[in-house]
Structure formats: structure tokens, C-alpha cells
Amino acid sequence: MPEAIRAVRGMNDILPDESGLWEFFDDTIRTWLAGYGYRNLRTPIVEQTDLFVRSIGEVTDIVEKEMYSFIDQLNGENLTLRPEGTASCVRAVIEHNLLYSGPQRLYYSGPMFRHERPQKGRYRQFHQVGVEALGFPGPDIDAELIIMCARLWRLLDIPDVRLEISTLGSIESRLVYRTRLISYLEKFYDELDEDARRRLKTNPLRILDSKNPAMREILEGAPHLFDDLDEDSLIHFDALQRILRNQGISFEINHRLVRGLDYYNRTVFEWVTDKLGAQGTICAGGRYDGLIAQIGGKPAPACGFAMGIERILSLIRETDAAEIHTVPDVYVVHQGDIAAGFSWKVAESLRDEGFKVVLHSGGGSFKAQMKKADASGARFAAIIGDDEAATGQVSIKSLREAAEQVKIDLTKVTVFLGNI
Ligand code: ATP
Ligand code: MG
Figure 1 (cartoon, rainbow, N blue to C red):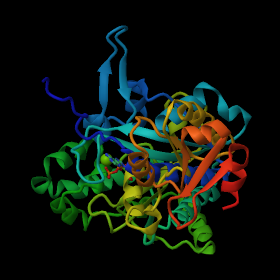
Figure 2 (tube, helix red, strand yellow):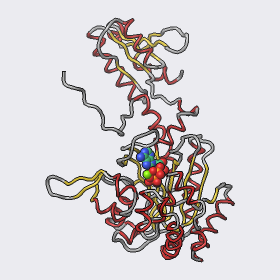
Figure 3 (cartoon, rainbow, N blue to C red):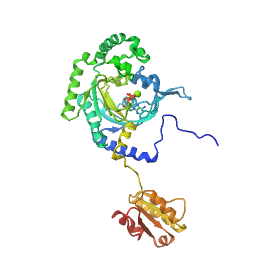
Figure 4 (cartoon, rainbow, N blue to C red):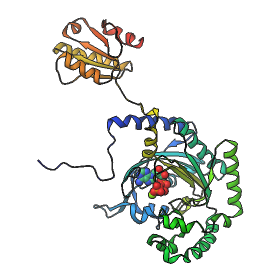
């Protein structure tokens, strides 16, 4: 026998026992997003590699080592499986001139690809929901994005998610800070790890995001970006905090918060839980006023976030909301040729009325079929023998409660089931 083929490392199947939870999540976010006026945008999974290089930034984990890039064998184009959704969203908005008709509230949901070391909460194919508000300059929209996250945690019954916020200021103020940070870190050059040394010249702010404990210790004494902030960014940040306080959203200011992607300015935020170990960030976002122009659009402000669905679902799984199964209402068992023909009619009539129906397939005795009916979790079995078929009737047996089995006309079955 040939060796069985397995899924690619770090890329997971979502099996039927688990997909109910995913569908519950999809349903929940759909109503949640509609409640705030965000509309769905669906973009291709493959994009020109340049899109990500130009938007995410060359000296980032993603672009340096995590992208699935390949040359299209047919036309030589350099393509990449999307590692995140903001770049594609902004590309599509520019390409279709969506901002022409005013600011846009958009969201996307789907798989993203990053070549990372797989571990709990970190996969090579993972899923994100991303929400982007394009064309809005004010801090009210930053607040809206944060407030809607807080509502989602309530809807999903996820407790104890901490909000951390900060501001990166303007691109100009960041340059001033960059010089100060470099001179501080140069004093520790001998103790810096390889990554940090490389980034010292190219992208020193990213060192602040280092997960290496030795680096974290050095960073304790590093100067604060906060001291170099421009006036307008400070006003923006104050206004955001005021709205959050008025809306009863608690937060901590974390001066070390630098997002992994280059395109952020002003507001950055993360929602973090202590329940997932090192992979505790379930949602991250911020403002990226420069990105649209950076990838060729007419300059416009923007703000957004993305959440990791796998991480969120592993939190829901631990709460009671995990009791989500898709079970049929009725399992139809049948024996005999005439009964088999009639069973189609029964199943389809029930489906016409909105019942979830499994029609038995594969033959077997009534007893064996009833075992399958029971195992399906259905509330009722519809039993059809040739007698029933001959008179256009169906025997209904409750599988979950002690009740008499009753024989009724097919025409009355849906009313009968609907009344129980
Ligand atoms: P991290 O620091 O954990 O690598 P990141 O800064 O690279 O995160 P973002 O690009 O901001 O992550 O993505 C937003 C969210 O998507 C993260 O907060 C996380 O919940 C989720 N996420 C990111 N990478 C992965 C992954 N490889 N597997 C599962 N979820 C992920
Ligand atoms: Mg990462």
C-alpha cells in the first residue's frame, strides 16, 4: 500500500465535531458586525508579493521569514499566500475606488498563511477576522473599534481579556525617537541578540517587541516613545482615552506596545488573555494613516484590527458555550422497496418545512437503523415500512422522551412535529 498523504505541517483540518463551534462563531460575528455597520469584503488568497513587502515592511518577521511566496510557473509572477488581510483590503479599496463614495466600514474573515514554528495557538494556516475603518481620521473610530471588540467578548462569553493601548505618534516623531533608542541600545551592543543587532540599523523599534527575556531586561531602561510624541498625536490619544473611560472600558497603557507590522501610527492596541500562555494576544490593531498612500492610493486615514480565530475558539471551548452541535431533528428509517421510495418524499416534505432531516442510507434491519437514529442525536425517528408507505403514513417515535409511537398521515407530520 502506498504511504498515506498527510496534511501540511502547521495546517489543520477542522473536523465535523469542531466545525459547529466555527459556525457558531461565524454566525455571531456576522450579527455583531452588522450591528456596527461593517460590510464584508472578500479578496483573493493569493496576491502579488510586492503588496506585502510594500505594506508590511521589509524588516518584519512576516516579510523576512514567514511568507509563502512562489513564482507562478506559467507567467513568472512573484506571488504570495496572504499572511494578513489589511494589505489586500487596502489594495481592493484603492483598485475599486471605494473611498470615492465616502469612508468605508469593512471586514474580512478567512485563512492566513505564515511559515512559523507550529505550536499551540500558532499555526502556518490560521484564521483571522479583520475589521477596517477607512477614511475616518478621528479618535472616535479608534474607540468604536475597541468598543466593538469588548462587545464581542461579551457575546462569546469570554471573560478576563485585558486591553492594552498605546500611541506611536506620527512618522516624524517616531524618527526622533528612533535616534534616541539607537543610542541607548548601542550601549548594550555586546549583549544584544542576533535579531536585535540586525534590527538596530534597519528597524530598531521592532526590538521593543522582542520575546527574548534577555532583551526584555535591557529594554526595561529604554527611553519611552511617549516623550517624543507630537502634539496632535497626544490630543488624539487623550480623546480616545476619554471615550473609553466614558464607555466603561478599562485599559492599561503599555509603552512597549509596538505592533509587528510597520504600517501603524498613532493608536495601537492589543487584547490579551492570560489563559493561553505565550500566545495570549487574541486581537491586535491600530491606526495606519500612511498605508493607503504607501501602496499607491490617494492619501486617506485608516484604522483596524485583526483577531486570531483559533485562539478565540480555544477560549470558548473552555466555557459552556462549547455545547454547540448540529444535530438533525428527524432521522428517517425505512425498509422495503416501496418504503425506500416513499422515504424520499417524507424527508423532502419535512425539509420543505425547515426540519433538519437525515435519511438513512445503507440498509440494515430496523433495529440496526434505530441504533443509528439514536446515535445521530435526532429528537425523532420517522419509521417507514411498506405498510406505512402503502397508506401514505409515517410512524413517529420520540428518541429523547418516553412517548407512545404514533402513526400519522404524511400531510399531518410536519404540523404534528411542529407542535411538540
Ligand atoms: P504574534 O506576536 O503572536 O506573532 P502578530 O503580531 O504576528 O502576533 P498579527 O499580525 O497582529 O499577529 O495578527 C493578529 C492576530 O492574529 C494575533 O493577535 C493572533 O491572535 C493571530 N495570529 C497571528 N499569527 C498567528 C498564527 N501563526 N497562528 C494563529 N494565530 C495567529
Ligand atoms: Mg507573528
